[in-house]
Length: 250
Image 1: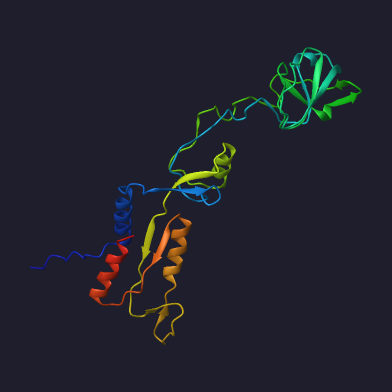
Image 2 (image 1 turned 135 degrees about the vertical axis):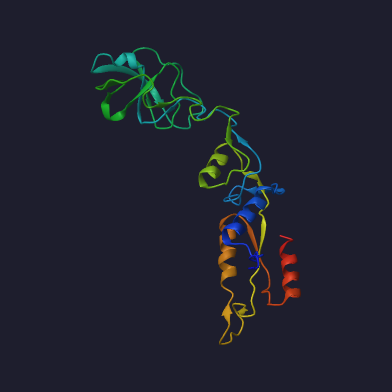
C-alpha cells in the first residue's frame, strides 16, 4: 500500500501572498505625526480635511470680458454702459449691476451682484464708457457659482488618503500648512544564503552581491514604507532564527 503524500510545509507563492495580505488587513493604522505640507507628500493622511469656506468663495469669472445681464443681449448688437473694471484679487466687490450696464472683468475676478453672465472680450468693442457686444449669451455662462466645487465644512480629503500632488494642492487651498499623517510602517528585508555578500564586500568566484534587498527597499519606499535592511542570514538555523526575530520587530 502506497504511503500518503507528504504535505510540504513550504507555502506556494500565492499561498504566501494570501497569508501576508490577510495579516496586513487586520493591522490597525499606526501612530500619527505632524508633517509640513511638502514633507507630507506621498504620506497617508491621518485626519479629515474639510473646506474652511465655499470653493470658490464668490461667483468667479472664467473669462476676460464683461459682466452683464444676459437679458440685455436679446437684441444684437447691444450697447451697454461700462460702470468700471473688476480685477482679480479685488478686496471689495462693486455695487450691484443694473439693466443696461456692464462691468469690465478679468479671469478669476468676482462677478458683481446682478450680473448673471460674462461675455468674452473677443465679442466686444469698447469706446469710452460704452461697450458694444455682438454675441448673445445664456445666464450662467462663463461663471463658476459660489460653492460650486465645495461648500464650507464639506469633506475634501478623508483620513487614509494617499497625499499625491492634487491632494497636497487641495490641502494648501484650505490653509493647511501642516498635516497629521500616519507614521511610515517599518518593513524588514532579510536576504538569506551563504552565497550572498554585501555590495561593497570583496567577492569570491561563487558569490553574488546582495542586490535584491535594495530593489525591495526601493519598492517599500515607493509604497510609503520605511525599509530596514537586515544583515545577510547564513544557512545556519540559529542565526537565521535570530534575524527573523529581529525582522519581526518591524
